[in-house]
Image (tube, rainbow, N blue to C red; front, side, top):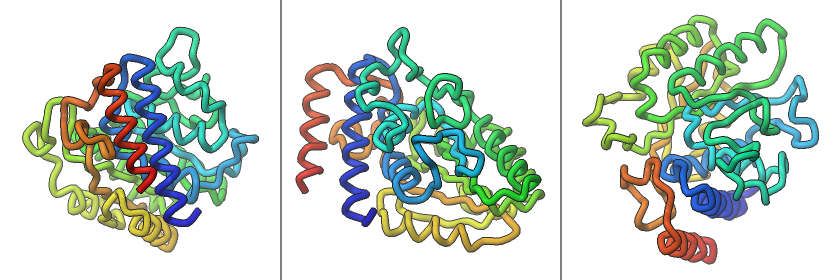
Amino acid sequence: MNTLELKKMANVVRKDIIRSVHSAKAGHPGGSLSAADIFTYLYFEEMKVDPKNPDAPDRDRFVLSKGHTAPGYYAALARKGFFPVEDLVTLRHIGSHLQGHPCKQHTPGVDMSSGSLGQGISAAVGMAIAGKFDNADYRVYTLLGDGELQEGQVWEASMLAAHRKLDNLVVIVDNNGLQIDGDVADVNSPYPIDEKFKAFNFHVINIDGHDFDQIRAAFEEAKTVKGRPTAIIAKTVKGKGVSFMENQASWHGTAPNDEQFAVAMADLEKAGEA
């Protein structure tokens, strides 16, 4: 996809996020919206995956370490063709395969059940080590929240990733600056995020997580790195694309009511036209 096509798809993913969270009357729109461009790039440009064969041994792997942003993940999977787009409005409903956090037993395309913060990156490191053991050429990607970096397990996993020289692993941090309790810098500051990953011997790339040219360049650069993992620190806006949600911690885990839903969809319609 070219940059314009990626922007259009990301806008569709954002609409799907709002639609599914509104239907569920629960969920996490803020961090799903901030990561929508990353989800879109991974599934429509970067990753080697086949919706017709979601368990192909040579597929690239993705672990959503910040599992609460499942609405964005599910939207990308559905739009890629892993399951019907119509399923998205069943988010969190009884009997739906779309649980509040990703579950690999039920949802096609999900490589790891996640949601307990800090654990996803550990699973991704394990997958990358397995790839090295098997001399496989698949790559492993994992998306973390910046608040999630407060979990010690993240740094244990990072230490092992560098020790094992996992150049088949890309860690992406959605640095939208906000977590459920407010500004990450006030709750328990993870900064400087880039210098921390450098200290753990990662190759580090800082980008604007809403600029597809920068996103593309970062993932292409990661492919050239040998002998160590890559961390892409993506500066983003929580609630990106919805006027009243942007940069508001209160929209971390709140569903829009009917009136708010209408405003949000109108915002995204305007963005789509632009």
